[in-house]
Image (cartoon, rainbow, N blue to C red; front, side, top):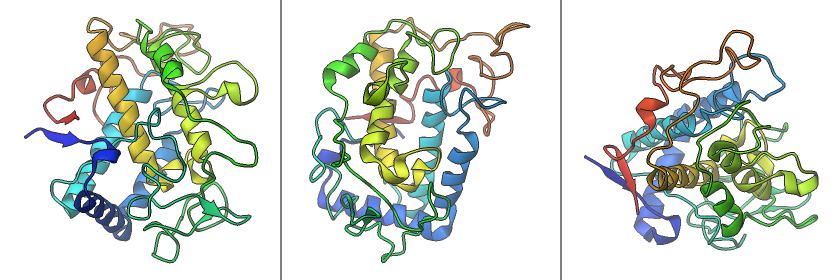
Amino acid sequence: MVYTRKNVSSLTAAEKKRFVGAVLAVKRSGRYDDFVRTHVDYYVSDGDPGLRVAHMAPTFLPWHRQFLLDFERALQKEAPGVTVPYWDWTVDRSPVAGPWTDDLLGGTGRGPDREVTTGPFTRRSGWIVKDGFTDADFLVRDLGRPATPLELPTRSELDGAMRESVYDVSPWDSTSSSGFRNRLEGWTRERGDARWRNHNRVHRWVGGNMLGGASVNDPVFWLHHAFVDLLWSRWQQAHPDAAYLPDRPPGIGSTQRGRIVARDEPMPPWDVTPSQLSDHSRIYRYV
């Protein structure tokens, strides 16, 4: 049966409560920290050796689609029918509204250490960070980065990625100058804050634990990536003939040989290929 992922702004009080309760239950079981470690393990940058699948690679979108599905199934074991809502950061742009309410994700961090002390994901309520970007064992946020203000991506900035007609281009990494995947992921060659676009800028705007490979520690990670997944779905609808690229592995002599996954190759840690994840319509839909 096809289930529905909703805009976080349209959730009822009961739906928020069930979602939060399921996330906390997954955390208590220890499974949540497994998701954190998986993302850390597969966050491989251009400059690191080995296969890249989670970021800076064509598999950025299908890899996170499968990751979301795994998390959603974990939630549904705790609370049948619960799904991951999405946060449209082009519309809900305030650090004191949208998902940042006490009945959902809580607000920004307080004090010099930026510890989150409101909402359900506080250290006091049992949300302990075990694998973070610092030694702190509490959730950290710095919404909007008040000391050096940073804006969320705008609809016009996002439209630049949505207009791309090709899924990805060589060299299939963070330096690709065009292609939907890298434009949406948000890597650029600019300096300062301008180098962070779309997906990447949202991570920077939230700050704290959302910086780096351990970003899963902040539950907003899932809402953010559900929206990224929705954007991929909309792009596919607008460009029905633009399939995942590359369609075959890079040839002998290519610097990307053995470093990226082609359309019909499995993406670790799963035995699933990008082509198998190109259509989600039989699993879930967005409203």
